Length: 270
Ligand SMILES: Cc1cc2nc3c(=O)[nH]c(=O)nc-3n(C[C@H](O)[C@H](O)[C@H](O)COP(=O)(O)OP(=O)(O)OC[C@H]3O[C@@H](n4cnc5c(N)ncnc54)[C@H](O)[C@@H]3O)c2cc1C
Image 1: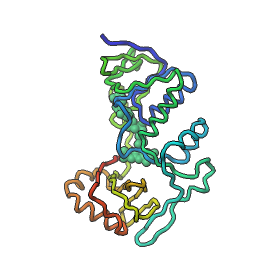
Image 2 (image 1 turned 45 degrees about the horizontal axis):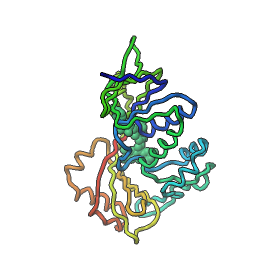
Image 3 (image 1 turned 180 degrees about the vertical axis):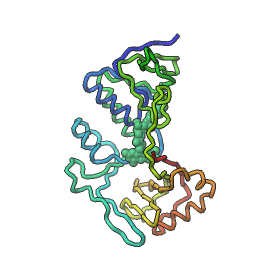
């Protein structure tokens, strides 16, 4: 038996887009159900920078003070090393916003925070471990979603159905929507490297002839982003870690040596 639920808006995906939208609609009294296929928000290397414009929106929503009580780091200035020269490339302290900094906070903490605030509204409902498998169609239009949960199948009917289920969106696929390729020429390799007490304190960008490395100071470790040509990740993997390390070493000043706990991931940039 498939259980059927009626709501005004159902959202597939509890990432930043789905959770924040659910929060905003619930604040306006719209009955909303957010469906997230995972049981929690734990993802490594996701969206750790929260920019001053986003922090300003939190101020407008009245949740900024609470947000800043959560563990985070603040970047007020960015420095880049271009070849052998160092130069400041960003100074957030002049911004006309309440927070004159970029906040660093793991995406799962940010999403927990939004969910916690949204859940104070009785019109907000978040279903975790709820995987959207299909859209419900009627008279040529989408009228809801089919969902798989540990307790069984659900059919959610809604006046508005939203697909915020990320880059491999099931909703987009089943609703036969087309992807617009923006032609971004790069991907990013992400690494986490140990940070030693003697390492510099600031956040860095290293630039040299077609190469770009960003080092984010996360106190106990460096979160590193190395820009690579689009679609080259597999080739780099096959060339092996030593060659990869050599490319990084050619860019940084030599103190970034703690490769023993290195974990590497990849972001596709659309
Ligand atoms: C390595 C990396 C680093 C990044 N760094 C930054 C950064 O520093 N700052 C920044 O602002 N942005 C950053 N981004 C980008 C940011 O993470 C994305 O823009 C953002 O996560 C997109 O949000 P979204 O809600 O659209 O999609 P997603 O975050 O992909 O969320 C989609 C959600 O839908 C869920 N889902 C998928 N399929 C289903 C299904 N069938 N049923 C139910 N749920 C489903 C997924 O589990 C996921 O929780 C980074 C991204 C990556 C990958």
